[in-house]
Amino acid sequence: MSGSHFYHGGQRALQDAFDSRALADRLEERSRVAFTDDDRAFIEGAIYFFLATADAEGRPDCSFKGGPAGFVRVTAPSELAFPDYDGNGMFKSLGNLAVNPEVGLLFIDMHGRPRRLRVNGSATVRRDDPLLARTVGAQMIVRVAVRAIFANCPRYIPQLSLVEPSAYVPAPGVTPPEPAWKEFDAFKGLVPPRRPTWDGTGG
Image (cartoon, rainbow, N blue to C red; front, side, top):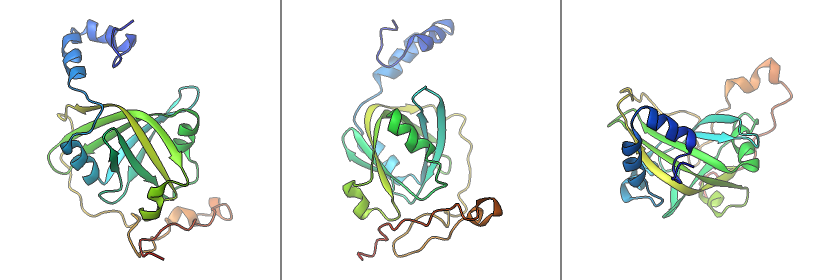
């Protein structure tokens, strides 16, 4: 047993091998289960994050999720929500959540002051969530019940420049362009029509 709800035996073994258990314990003490005001500002200002999921056998998958600032919302002291937008139809991440709700989110800022924030918890996916009615372009909503929130050392984050946002990010009253790959010969006749979503115009 590791004697911790935050670490398991494999992690403890490496901490002991590198004499970092005391430091790891202090970092665990500084983790939290409720968002601070600073956490909320950082998360709701993010235009992307990385999502880690696993299937029922524990095989992992990692996905990039992007959108306009505010597309991820802190909806309760220990809950956040984000939309599922039109994608490639594989549903790798959300399909995983249907069989294994455990999830890890990495919020990272590479365009200003380097910063990382990790959020671990359990997710649910809904096609009838009340947030759908006020989330432009969403076809489903994912809610994450938080188990742990903790900052990560930003020392290796590069300083990058944000040139422009993606033209595909949903915006009120705007029909986003279709990605070029949907017209490739390999996918002709296989791409389902885009599902109607709320467009922000109140219609």
